[in-house]
Amino acid sequence: MFANTPKPPYYAVIFTSTLKADDPEYDKMADLMVELASKQDGFLGIESARSEIGISVSYWRDLDAIKQWKAQTDHQVAQSKGKQQWYSHYITRISKVERDYHM
Amino acid sequence: MFANTPKPPYYAVIFTSTLKADDPEYDKMADLMVELASKQDGFLGIESARSEIGISVSYWRDLDAIKQWKAQTDHQVAQSKGKQQWYSHYITRISKVERDYHM
View (cartoon, rainbow over the protein chains, first blue to last red):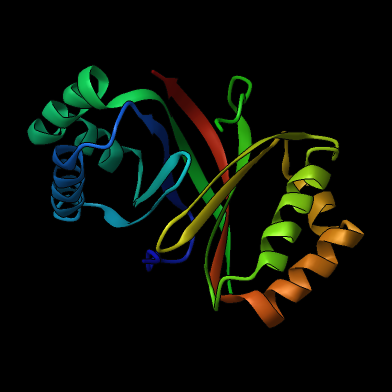
């Protein structure tokens, strides 16, 4: 689904990843992370797609909201499991959305 | 594939879309656009995935490189066909990558 973001400026965390293998536990964890992220102060929405690689873009009010989500306890556990078990590679990019255009 | 981007800062164009229907002509056009974009001055790479929605993130040296790609003739034709024929909805977000982390 599309994220219903407000007028810029706001922040986007672009997370690109490849998985070692399909794992239903990963899918469950990913769903849980979306649920928990959406309860965080400053969360604005998330957009995700996966084919050869996975791309999840989460949107945030400011850098402080991103920092707090990064440090959230359950998310820390998920990040650690991700590095150890699930991801073969990933890149996280923190970016500031300056403009947007809707169809 | 992952985009092999340089050290920040650089720009990311986050393009999220839904298609009206599967159309092999769209896939061909999308491939051609990646090929043409990669010849543009200031192009740094692109990452794409599609499942329920499609997300393509293209990376650029600066806003001027993005502007020139937006105005490129073949790309203009593709944008127009996209609006008329292919996309049911899309959002384009122009963002400045401030930091990145690699696994």
